[in-house]
Amino acid sequence: QKEVEQDPGPLSVPEGAIVSLNCTYSNSAFQYFMWYRQYSRKGPELLMYTYSSGNKEDGRFTAQVDKSSKYISLFIRDSQPSDSATYLCAMREQGAQKLVFGQGTRLTINP
Amino acid sequence: GAVVSQHPSRVICKSGTSVKIECRSLDFQATTMFWYRQFPKQSLMLMATSNEGSKATYEQGVEKDKFLINHASLTLSTLTVTSAHPEDSSFYICSARVPGSSYEQYFGPGTRLTVT
Image (tube, rainbow over all chains, first blue to last red):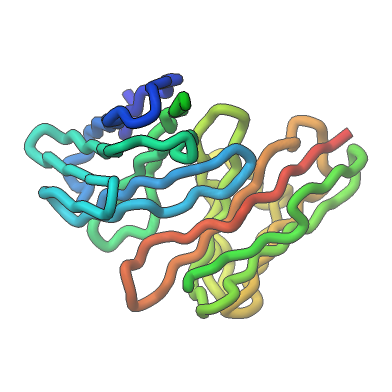
């Protein structure tokens, strides 16, 4: 079993829809949770960063962490074609440098 | 802020030759940089952690003698793929930590290596 599980998709939704992306993990020591967006043939871009449990909102993006369920989510409201990319969840333990990544979900927003 | 660059963006080399990839932090000093490898439609695989002024720490299964990492300054780390083979063809991405802030990693744009 992988430490971090993420459905690779692909996920295709119409423009304006609410998108929900998720990851589950098995290591209860993970404390820091991130979402990265990666466009084709580009490096990942940090989107959201959350420490421990709770919600964090930034514009159209909301990140949720449920440590009791070992489950994290990224919601995208009013999705745009420019949101089409691969979304990677990542997490790490307190004091650790190493990030553990999910496989990434390929998302396409159709105009 | 927190911009990381990589050079070159694409490189094609012949089998048996060596290729050097540079990773630079442009607007901050990075004591720690990371090198990843990514195959098509797959996630990032950490190859090694590079600390300025010391030897890199390689992940299990990564050949130290094949993937030489040097972190000679606080803004530059290099990855040299020695005696490259076609199976080394991949997308190589570096990242750097911003010390004293969020401690999270900012990634470079990646280098596409093709070995013929």
